[in-house]
Amino acid sequence: MEFSVKSGSPEKQRSACVVVGIYEPRRLSAAAEELDAASDGFISGLLRRGDMEGKLGQSLMLTHVPGVLCDRVLLIGLGRERDFTDGGFRQAVSVMANRLQEAGAAEAVSYLSNLHVKGRDTLWRVRETVLGVSHTLYRFDQLKSKKDQPRRPLRKLTVSVPSRRELPGGEQAQREAVAIAEGVSFARDLGNLPGNICTPTYLAEQAEALGKAHKQLKVEVLERKDMESLGMGALLSVARGSRQPPKLMIMHYQGGPRDQKPYALVGKGITFDSGGISIKPGAAMDEMKFDMCGAASVFGTIKAVASLELPINVIGVVPASENLPDGDASKPGDIVTTMSGQTVEILNTDAEGRLVLCDALTYTERYEPQTVIDIATLTGACIIALGHQAHALLGNNNPLINDVLSAGRKAGDRAWELPLWEEYQDQLKSNFADMANIGGRPAGTITAACFLSRFTKKFRWAHLDIAGTAWNSGDNKGATGKPVPLLTQYLLDRVEENA
Image (cartoon, rainbow, N blue to C red; front, side):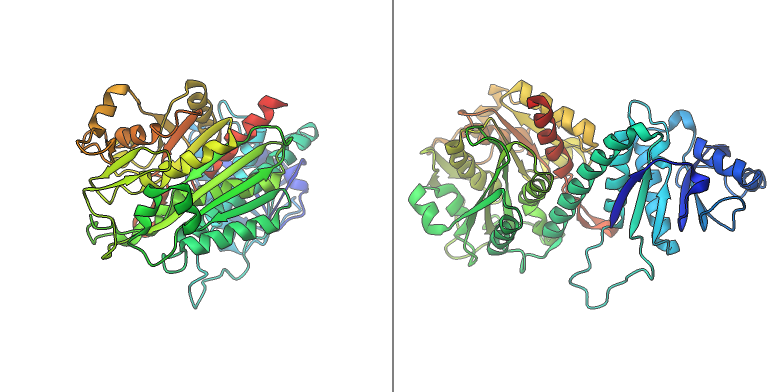
């Protein structure tokens, strides 16, 4: 899919299709008015006859519109103008993408990016257009023997900006959006792959391939023997039930000066989670292939950062393993020693994500990072608390928390802060070890973060629990690619901050 940015009048576009918006009730947007004037009232005449009301989600394809140079005009319903917000804009873009794909328009020019959205500028609208079209048209069919391909898929979209002086900013927004979209798609591909293909070894191969594709990216993969010598007893305890060897991937992106301390991203990479000995119910257990979506988001973000050649240093750390039952698997009541030297009583083997993460977080200390963000599909309690709309966010540094929240708002990939008060730590008490790996049913998302906080005292740290946002269930089952947009925006903001 190719994207470009240009400025110009809609009636002068030599294109297979020009896309403009219609507000409810039957009100033309500025670009639609220009087409209507050029066509001597052709569009407004159709609206008066009741062909379209302009409700959000509606669309109408027109052919043989007089006075214009394009082959077709696509009208997209926007709802009432006073109610047209971020969500309405994204829905309009999605409707446009689907209709263009169905209609066989191989290329088009969109003027939706010229619409007014309260509190948003042209650069935001350009970026959201590119991201929205890419997300809507994404398909995961690489494992199907027969692929349902459109006869003439949309291959090129030109995104309009209102004036020529906005072209440089629009082109930069488009470039950033394409990189983020490619990172999101990469994360979705990894998440959607089944566990028999996407093993820890497969993830390590993907990391090495990413390193070969980008000269500023160096990749290191630690094997079981390396983890043993480092004393990663928590991570290795999870891998004991699997025949697949665990891997610890470290992706070093060097875009800034060598002496600049990096920003670190740590992603949970459980490529399949049965719960181990504390086995999960059978219903929807297939979705536990998505338990590595935290790792996938690190891969996608590193890919975006490397594509943009951002002038900063970033470390991506991914601990990967399966969590399966076996004669050698960890048992409830087992006690393991983490890389930090702290001991953990494993009361539930299905609370394995925090075990692989705690050793990875300790390992990350050696890079003396400016900040550390870990990303994990960690707790079902997160879905009970926040549903599927927001990531849970906790951490030990208020400025970092605010930066992550701000990045999420900008990217439309939002997080919500939960408390990390000292009182919650009492729930992790153990009679036999320094701590237990679970804290009971109350505040499960918070006590999981409390566990991780015991391994993050040497750096500024934030934790994103993406259990409710990493994938969709039901008819639209599949990985979402979140929070790649949030993480990439956070790093873009750091570049701007340091400029």
